Image (cartoon, rainbow, N blue to C red):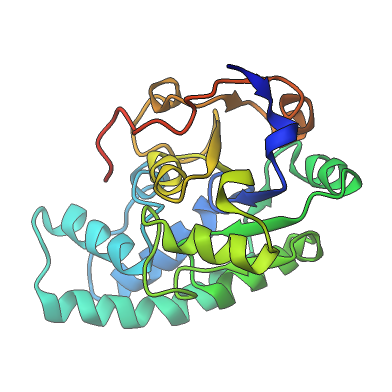
Amino acid sequence: MDRPLAAAVDGILFDLDGTLADTVPDLLQATNDVLAGLGLAPLDAPRIRGMIGTGERDLMRQALAAVLRGPPAEPLLEQAYRAFDDAYAQANGRHSRLYDGVESGLRRLHDLDLPLAVVTNKPHAFSVALLRSLGVADRFAVIVGGDSTPLRKPQALPLLHACAQLGIAPMTALMVGDSPIDVAAARAANCRAVCVTYGYTRGRDPREFGVPLLSRIDALPALLQTAWPSDAIAAPRFPVP
């Protein structure tokens, strides 16, 4: 039986990179600064775009593998990972921007008295700094970073932690993301999910994710009033990275 989504939603969890903000320029700068420091060739924006979503260490692993055309040795990966923090601290927020409709969408959701959280694989300190630089940090009651819990998305724990902090049951939370990682995390946590049609889909077509799609965040309040399939928390029909 379908039911209005609004009746089931007590709070909304947002992914950050690729959902609220286009962060490719900053991540590209930081990654290429690390590669340059190692005497390696730079990568272009499309390559970096496809590597975002699973945290800093995996970003460095993928970047090194792309340049070296093979898996990096563990000492080299560790060196790159350590260097990335300093490089990204310098780049974070410099060229990132909110996607169209995000600021107005967050404002409308705030007017509906829905508590909002960010659940991202980006480290907490970088997430807070970025949201502050974008002028929207105060819209979120909770910010869960990739180092806030022992496990990251697509595991359920970060979403469950956010729900606990918001004081809501997972089944009444809505996860808004841009990738199969977000959808898998939502389903693991027994949350509902929607995906934006832009962002960092890791080469997947969002129509394959089996959840409602949004072209803009400010379309979310209207979606909250639409019918929602009762089986929307079914097992994912795609492989999780």
